[in-house]
Length: 245
Image (cartoon, rainbow, N blue to C red; front, top):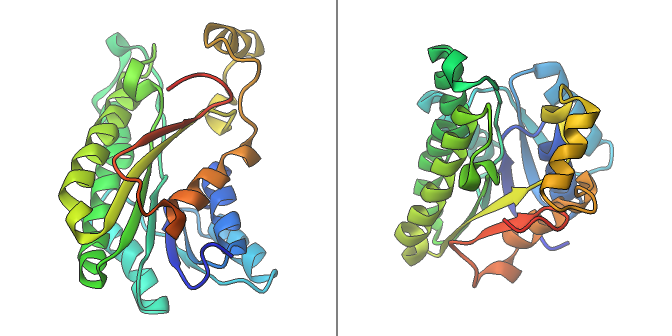
């Protein structure tokens, strides 16, 4: 029960890794806000948690607007009275070679993957500063450090989140707010359209024996959200089955 009595907001937590992180945080005692833009999928995760006699509430707002970010955080405040942990996980991809990429494909990814981190963080830090503590965990990618073919939009967004994490850690440390990022590498829905032979080439290029399994990812989030990590801030931590971030 490392997160007993803590309130955690996890954006993009109705599916994939975000859902797994939310489930594990609830099991560790946190009261969680499940966020996603597809209500029936969000509600299913909330029910899954409540069926275990754990606490969760739903939010359906989009992180890409200031109003959405504020509403997501306010869901925690209105239901539980505070926010201890913010996990900025919501992300989308719209892969295309740069020469063919449209303005909409660029803007939509930047709006969710980069601006969405700003909107939710901006909404959360006022509460965290007032209560003199908080944990912010951003989700980044090796694409943000090294780039990736066909992902100039996603790479730019995640690179921005890396820099945002480092800057925020310096600004917010004096308020006892820890800001870190996790760079996971495991097979998610983003890889569903990647042909098997290409996926094998990705693994080989990264010198991986295997990609991390999804269940291997949440423990680092639990650690960074807990009081055990009070001495850690401004770090980008790779969880990737052997590929050094």
